[in-house]
Length: 349
Image (cartoon, rainbow, N blue to C red):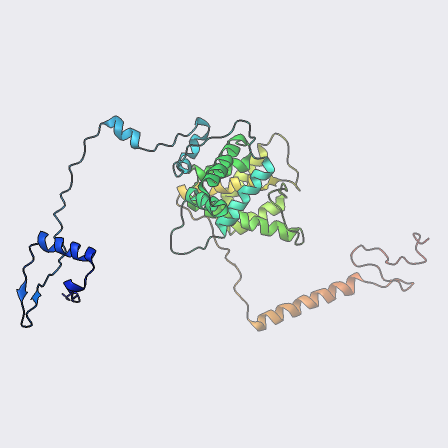
């Protein structure tokens, strides 16, 4: 242990106040002086840190059950928000909504839901497990608003709006992810299917950006088939066929017949896709079967021979179908009518 540096104090050089303090210190601690070789009285004083007394842990104070219950912070959840208990338990205050304040409109609510979906989909996919959807939603509002009071206010506004629009399929789907009806694995499947749906409709509208928060997206029968193929894989696979059966039953059970061009709304498709996903998981079946090509890849020589045979068939068809009339006019290949019409034809005017 290193010694502290020495400090020499000459009593005769001190001020009257310092002499008084040092004198009191010498008397209180019974400091002994000795005469040195120079005839001066010298005392050596060493300051040490006092030994800390042993800390004795106090005995736990006996508390009654009522006192312990009073010290527990309990979040009271209204009956209307009973299905959102998992999210409300993460908050520090009980849900309260001003009766005079109206819930979010359906457009603003759907816009907010899709913002949450987009943010969840943008989360990096790694080996680390993602937080639960309730924890992610809390983090989403904390990142956006910061202050706990504002975070709680907007979360409660969302929950009361979900309850007010509980008859809407889109609000019901979101609530199903919050209350645990669909787990995080089902949410990942939902977001993947939603992403493929938006990409397909954007492609079919020639690149027009789709606003799923404002536009009611209806899909034709052909689009449903194509999207189901993208989501479930091979058309002869069990996942694709299981979804097709659910889709046929759903469309057949509608009170009004669906047209070929407006067969199913976007949220109807996603809801059926989630039900199919849950059914396949319960049966231990994979929800995607890759497409297997029946014809093996051909060699360059075989491909060249196939194209040459195709060219020969096209030339043979042209030689027999395009016969020149006596007046020199050539009938149209597709319609079988003179194009342009012959001046000698009865249709010429």
